Image (cartoon, rainbow, N blue to C red; front, top):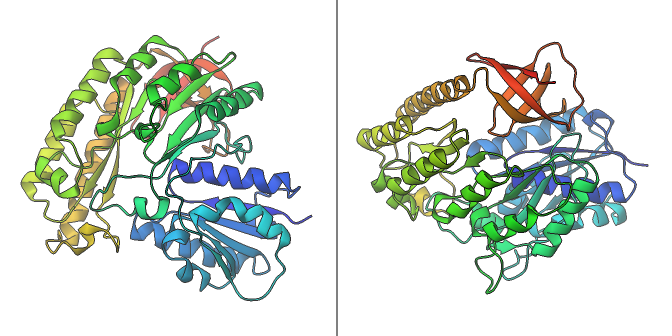
Length: 434
């Protein structure tokens, strides 16, 4: 029986898509292997948010082909949707699947006979359908399954290619989501992550459809549920009811990721982000006041065309003033087909690098200060598998602190209580409470 290997790039939605591909292949009795050199089929699930994402995908395909030239390489995901012919031209690639064809991978692999010429499957992205909930039990060894409840995006941020490669916003049926989460809970998974391309818009396009807060209220009533964690939610669609739900129920992790992108209203306007920096500030402070131990993270995009030193300082000042736990920092990457790609007032590359370096310094300082707040405190956590972190046993707290448990081997997928012993710049040490 042929064996397969999957390599995934990009966001949690891509990770969820890979889990669905993995489940589909296993249902056809294809075993998964951890070493690509042993695989008969290699699936590369790509991201295309930045030029760097594209480059990483191409490098991965070339490296995997060199390592295992006899394997059939299948490329899927957002880069495959955006530019399938560029990927089909890479040596070793036999099949390329756009995002609307991803579910066909197991069937086509099962039926296809080697022809020597790469084949591209890229049907139009569905403009009016639902987001299917695909089984996520096969996590590739990771502890926490991802349930994708929403896909696509109707926003038109001037720098973002995602709407063109993911299609319009679509939401999954509440009943299908509840059934999948019940199944995962019955199988013993202790933490489940809900994800979507634009998660905060869940249910908003369909008249009478339950929205995200209502969905979470239903999820909270599932018997035997461990913990639910939410992935990124944009500030313009962040319902404050989500915070009250998390404050009132132990089911929900005290962790929120809310993309900011810029602290300058002028830059936000050019980005076509439909909010002001004050909305983000008020939202973060509201969460902090309601749940003081919450881990709140954000995304920051530096070097957007026309970003002045004053704009950048506004972003720095806002972030330094807020109780944030971590930042994800990205330099501007022009994407062909987006409005910002044609903006003439590019920030010099050296200045972009300087701003990114400064923002990463702020992130490190914020994260260390956040972790040190919890010294000698007891926090709920889940033990993780080696596929998620390397080294000693790692736990992830509800408020998103990765902590090492020195000299103590604990099986993954256990909800535990840990005492934070020490927060160092490069790690957090903890011990499991009896």
